[in-house]
Amino acid sequence: MNKERVAMVSVLAFICIAAAALLGYVNGVTKDRIEAIANDKMQSAMEEIIPGAVFKEITLPDSSKFDKAFFAEDEAGNKTAFCAKVTVSGFADDIVLIVGTDLNGSVLGVKITQINETAGLGSKTNDEAWLSQFKGLSGSINLKKVKTLPTDVAAVSGATISSSAVTGGVQTALDEAAVYLGGANDE
Image (cartoon, rainbow, N blue to C red):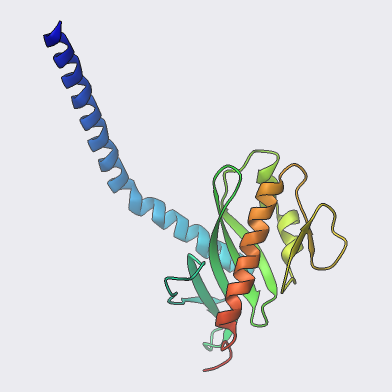
């Protein structure tokens, strides 16, 4: 009986080691491709928000709440706008969004590049009609059940956590962008 247990444990240990090695190999093979796809989504989102711009990445301090940040420049190299990639915790998973602002800190657009929220509820925060509420906003944004003031954003009914997450991500982008926009017109 004791030899059978040792044999079973040995087989189980071998299977676990083989599975871990295989997962490590697959991760190594796919990691670069997954990162390239995420970068392509980010680039496409920035181009949708600010068409025709060239995006120059900004070196961020370790304390930054941004994953990445960029100045948008025109053909002459003049700064025209600012874009930030922000990751927030949604209801089901992280939500990754791109927020573009003009040089005065007003939202030009918001695009979500990664979302795994509940279909028909939290996923509605990725609808262009809902995201368009952020255009033109600056300063403090208020998430409400019903939009009553120009600085309000109406939450998606039944998706308060997802709505709060996206709104918080936009607010983070506005708050932190102010640091970079202070010298945006300086050459």
